[in-house]
Image (cartoon, rainbow, N blue to C red):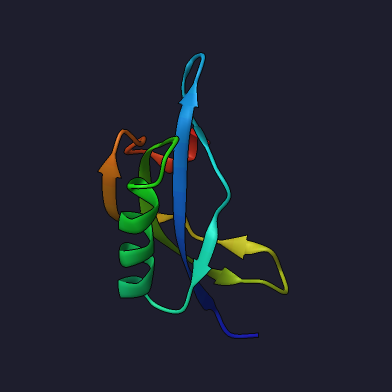
Length: 82
């Protein structure tokens, strides 16, 4: 199977030890993920968000590292810590 790229907007909420990820939202494109992440960052209770992409083969479960497209507010720069 060919590689597929997923685009995701991920909000973050305040936690006792910093921030915690909220519910991810899959989007149709990089631009849509950035717009959704910006929207999510302005919602009540959300301290920041990230738009990112991830490419891989879902049938084998092999994926490249996530690539941050844009960050809003208080969100980690490195997604590998999640």
